[in-house]
Amino acid sequence: MTSEKHLLTTGPRQCSGQTERRSQSDTAVNVTTRKVSAPDILKPLNQEDPKGSTYPILKQEKLPSSPAPSAIFSGGFRHGSLISINSTCTEMGNFDNADVTGEIELAIRYCFKTHSLEICIKACKNLAYGEDKKKKCNPYVKTYLLPDRSSQGKRKTGVQRNTVDPTFQETLQYQVAPAQLATRRLQVSVWHLGALARRVFLGEVIIPLATWDFEDSTTRSFRWHPLRAKAEKYEDSVPQSNGELAVRAKLVLPSGPGKLQEAQEGTEQLSLNGQLCLVVLGAKNLPVRPDGTLNSFVKGCLTLPDQQKLRLKSPVLKKQACPQWKHSFVFSGVTPAQLRQSSLELTVWDQALLGMNDRLLGGTTLGSKGDAAGGGDACSQLKLQWQKVLSSPNVWTDMTLILH
Image (cartoon, rainbow, N blue to C red; front, side, top):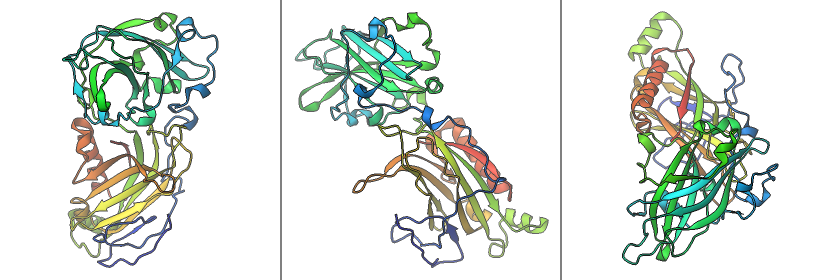
């Protein structure tokens, strides 16, 4: 996107960074791009190697063969189909429910050499009818590695027709680093495919991989798991996380004890205008593309009490799953009194190909309109961190923000 320079039309407020398109009601600001390199500002972001992140693979036929696979995961089993049945609507709650009954038989195996997680779906029994009046059931199985619910993270079997005791004999695969297994939960759900692509939820199983012993050969055996009713939209009332964003923030004000006290009290707003400095360090656990990478960038929008919006954008980092931008956003001409009533929205995006829309990966909000999606302790912690930034001028505050 071509950088543009505009003159500030109302008041002395300015911000530096790369501009983006905005609505006519937004005030344009003077903009420059700056990449922070000062050692006292930046500290290494504690995150996994990008090469070791979770990368769902869409075309399993290209996966490397597992060495000496057990009979459970070879022989008569075929790889599951990844062709979508246009089921995005089911993730938004747009589906029917049946009275959940029955069980699903599956086995799980992890190959440490190829970093391949294999879920073998063998069969189901005693399923509920997807269409009870017609006594009809066309079941199929779908999996996700939570918290990733993106279409790239979906795996599914083929559809079995007219049976409540289907046999699938299919293996679904993911590429995931060993260090990531402890942060994932395997969701296995069973669905009925009806006429006109109507879907009915038949039950699910959620398995925390942190408690699964992949080195024990007995855990590779097939097990029957009872199907359960669908959990709330966010399991166990925990909001869905789309990764983490590491930032450092500082309110820069005129030096001197007297001026600092006046600034904290919000007096002399004209003479004590300062700068809100934010260093976007990096992110991890983002919903990646099918090839395991992203062309990601960060947008920042500071909304002031008078609804003036100051917008900034980081450079795009290409083909990285765990990007480290180390990019500085500077919002100039703001006072502590204004910031106490302002909100700062940070969003992470995946740059789209030509002619397509950029994909929102996740976001969070600091300030007066704090991120309600965080809920409870997470939201309270976020508010305390933001208050610390405003009450401790000229001191850096490190924050790890959960993206929703």
